[in-house]
Image (cartoon, rainbow, N blue to C red; front, side, top):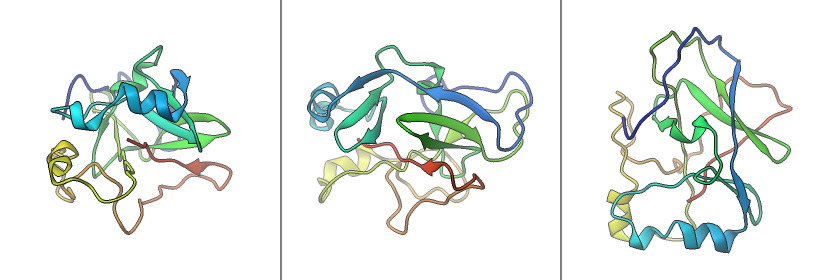
Length: 155
């Protein structure tokens, strides 16, 4: 789909916690300085927002979770437990299958026209919405228990 991607090396059962999305914890100003959309020719960030001004930057000390691609028809989802983010399987995943979750990125305010291409989706799914941004109607929530909060990437 994009970049390296992450592929299952064994069967993963639906509902299994696969990996923690880890990395350096930074504040909003540091995150913005590291990933400036106006300076990028292609969107590429490793950020998850875990609090009002707290982000995980997996580009610094992150796990292999940072290489999981976006898909509009994902087989995984990201959930927040406390101040940590975990990737869970939404369905059974066979060996050799690429792991993907819906990034559902959020951006404040109106997007500059140039950012429509910056945030374009090329996942190839039949239901592709054409963007890695959060849909206006809200993301689909896959069958996880109520103790976990579904999270979205910001930026």
